[in-house]
Structures are given as C-alpha cells and as structure tokens.
Length: 276
Image (cartoon, rainbow, N blue to C red):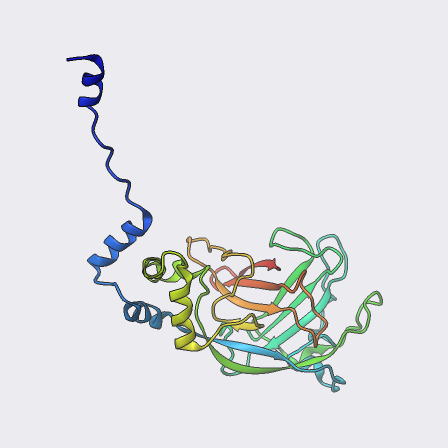
C-alpha cells in the first residue's frame, strides 16, 4: 500500500460537534417542552408583584412632609441622628424616602427606606463611596427631629409619590436566573432572535415592560444582568430601582437607573448604576 493510501485509508470523519441549540433541544425534548404554549406555562409561575412609583409634579411641601413618602424636600430624622455623610465626611444629598404602608412591595421588617447620593462623586457600584441606603426597621414618630439641609445643597424639588401595583417578570437578561428552561426554550423557538419568543410571552402575560421606578419585582437592566448574590450564593432580591425622573430632576448618567438589592437575613444592601 502506498504512503498516501495508508494515510487516507485510516482517516475517519470527525464527529459533528453538537451546538448549544441542539443540546437545549435534546434536554427539553426529554421534558416534553417544545412549543410557545410550553414557554408560557414555564413563565407564568414566576410572575411576581412590584410597586410602581409615579413621581408626581413638583409641589410645595406640606408642614408634615417628613412623614410622607416623597422625592426631594426634607427627610425623616429622629432625635440623636445627624445628616448622613459619605465615608470621606462629605454630606450626602437626600433623594427619596418611602414609608412601608400596606400593599407596598417592601420587606415586612422595614418601616422606612431612604436613599442618599453624592452627585460629585457619582458612585456606580457598591464598592464606591458616595451612596447610602438608610433603613428604619422601627420608626418612632414621637421622636421625630427636623435637621436643616446642609448649606451646600440647593433647594431640591419636592415631589410626592403615587403608588400602584404592577406585575413583574425578569427581562431577557435575567430570565435564566429564574427559569433556565424558559431561556433554553426561547432559544430553540427562534435561534436568530432567541429573546423574541420570551418577549412575546411577557407582553401577553403582563403587558410590555418599560423602565420605571419601582419597589420589589425584578430589575429591568439597561446594560446587562448584574444581580448580586447573598452569602449562600442565591440571587438577592430587588429592594428598589429608580429611573431617571424628570419631575424630581434626577438623571443617572445618560438616562440610566439605579438598582438596590437587599438581603433580609444579613441586612446587607448592594448598589449599582447602569445607563445607556
């Protein structure tokens, strides 16, 4: 046998590499998940409730504004407290507060949340200085105290908040964290635009999801999935996300949002900002 005959006679075709779409298809076939109806049935159980925050037009603050949920204006303080500062000693600007009344999607062990921010430092992530989530697990209104805003802050717009209940589902960036089979099925239903089938189901079940300020629910990411983990490796729950709000004069970068997550067991908060 010649050299070339020996060389090619022993050569075998390499087995075809299985694509990730083929892998998903095989896995889902075993679960009998194949259709858009199957996708809908996968998504329905993970629908949750969020509270939408509608920031109303700026108005004159009432005398008791410390005891009202609002953006801007005067925050709630109790005797013995001081105006919040960053780690480097700089005063933080008050952004908003929400009292946890009935039907709001906040943890039951929280009575009041506040958020403060340093616009000069402009922090983007938890590790950055210049942001503070202040949590009151118990408020004592008989100890309420008025603290003047630091002189370096301009008068901010006072905007009250209208609350409404809304349904929430993960965006395409986050669906595989909450239902991996739904992510896989979306991929095989439309290999070219794998997000399309999932978006159709979301719109059918709860309507089109847009960026908004909200309590609880699932985050809607601008740049990509960034949900932090708790100490046990589980996804932390969204405490709130705040959109760029014209009425309150808030602009997070280029029309961005801030996201704050909360671990009830440890009391730990995580912060991130994303923009277009």
